[in-house]
Length: 200
Image (cartoon, rainbow, N blue to C red; front, side, top):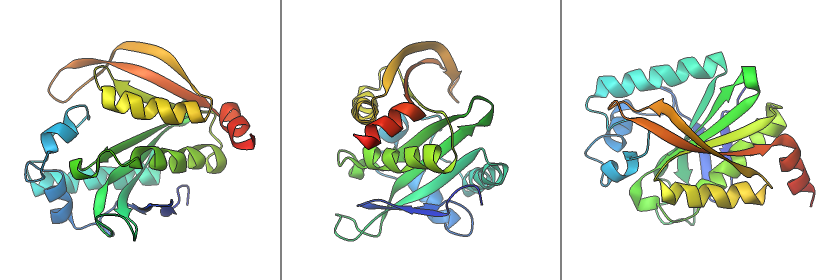
């Protein structure tokens, strides 16, 4: 198995997101307009709130295919005992792999009620370790949409903790589902920076 099925940090438990581990109706509820604050959650994400259960089922199908192909690992994030909301799904986290460039791109979305608790950095630490220690990749790259200042601040903190850096802005980086062409700020951590920071 290329990716670990589960991971744990101090406050989070990661469980592979697939049809075997998730109820498609529950998943659709969390990713739909019925979820409180979903418009704020998806403002800078590459997906819109799901309209139908079929859309969610297709999404999970795609994640299963990517897992088997070794190009993406996606996990539900559960809050561990002691956390406000223990046992609930706080969101999901992914690791997108570009084998040709030996690069990993961590991804996350959190339900709005769980913002501001530092879960993003905790999740990043776990996935960065997978990228460098298990998959032996050379670079972790984190793209952040221009104007998403909340995410930029969070990313800057954990990138700095691993002695990584800011590469600059990539103009016309990608197209969102609504047709908007967006710019990305790019942050990176090399394997050497990661290991040096871990040894200090």
